[in-house]
Image 1 (cartoon, rainbow, N blue to C red):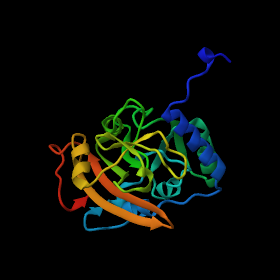
Image 2 (cartoon, rainbow, N blue to C red; image 1 turned 135 degrees about the horizontal axis):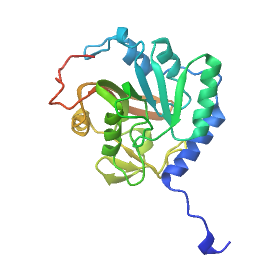
Image 3 (cartoon, rainbow, N blue to C red; image 1 turned 90 degrees about the vertical axis):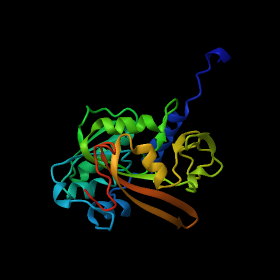
Length: 253
């Protein structure tokens, strides 16, 4: 093939899409189980957070980057109407088949953080566990936030995790400004070349989110799982800026 006919190399998003598609195809478990973060957030009671568990049934929730669908059994038990987006149809198909075997109804579509294929104000809840901070080429994290706010109903609840500065994935990463880091040494080989947004403290999260969201509750996890350092911010907030939502120290949502 002549050099002029050589197809362009895939961009970071395409490489990441393929890597995650292969990752989920290889693991493809029969059953999946929710994260401790989600169980604690939706079912626990804490000084700064107490979600109203009686208000879940019948509410529409979008799981952004649902992966193998591990959140769906809990969401189904709690009575949510489950929707989800992932970056490729093969990931959606695998999880759709798994949920059918488990007897769980879920509408799954291909979508991205800054391109969610649903109308405005479609959801009462958004869930983004280890997903909302992936930033597509040519975009910034603010573009993601604008899209999340678009599909969440006014007053709706956003449950999410964000990476802290020292999370394992940022080792040897290239800082490109504004908290955005191009990943260079992902030990899992999934995210190299992709841009993720990290956060140093609660104040930085508030600053980034406050034009679209308010009434924040925060948690933090810093754990070493057998040599891999996980450092995450846990966040629950509501759709609406600080001028329209009271931001109180003790949050009951």
